[in-house]
Image 1: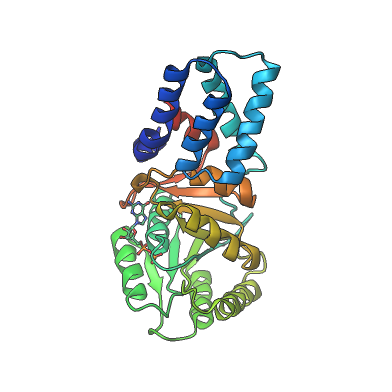
Image 2: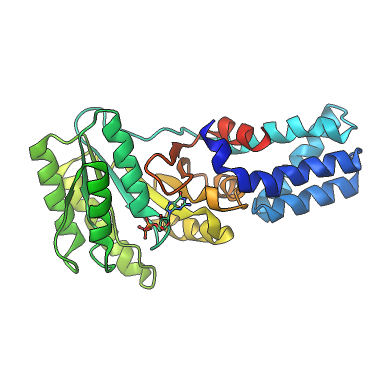
Length: 300
Ligand code: GDP
């Protein structure tokens, strides 16, 4: 299970505490629920989600007449899987025929470029022809950084000079992709948040250009979030998710955080599917999200 190693920190901070609680308290009483609540909030599951989860656990405990704390752990796993699974179709949406276009949005530093590089590698190793579009023309170094990934993975990058119109870059990229018979076009975008309405205008312009050239595109608009920022990632998701046509989430740096519970909070409060998770800095450290595997890796 690829999640297992990447989730070590979360497992230590969250699951081991739950297990300790279960061995220590033995009985399910008010204090037990209170401590469980604290542990879940500490793992960044988020207050609203924790309250909901505790309510569901209480109901389940009553229904099944569970008395021993030891019998609660499988119920907790079950409830977590349910929460994560609700309304989820995990896999990436691909074009029924022809080219798939995937757009990546998110603030600087969350791991957008790295995710694009990793995903390019994944598609390439499946035998697909991949092209990258350097749509972040704003941040210094963004284009070069994408090129470094392009070289590493062995895929081309379509770019213009820094400061140019990202929609023009996208237009070029789509034309090039069509000419070359590309299967998947992965598009980077700028992630500055200081000027939100400008950013949204820019994204809308990019959508329009892509849609004009490939009517079924973009097939996915993936919002990339840094899991180590915990509740901050949740606010970013709310901010972006509402306006920019986001179809799914990528949670990066899960390996670097004890706050893996954020996956549960985001899933529960946003109703946007978590499509991919980043579990390290290397090319292979990207996984399609799977609720059952995730929860099982936590409690394994
Ligand atoms: P961008 O500004 O959103 O394009 O972010 P980058 O792709 O440049 O990533 C920022 C930093 O986070 C880099 O040092 C990456 O190596 C690192 N990073 C990205 N994804 C992951 C991940 O899943 N795990 C870890 N540990 N680091 C990551």
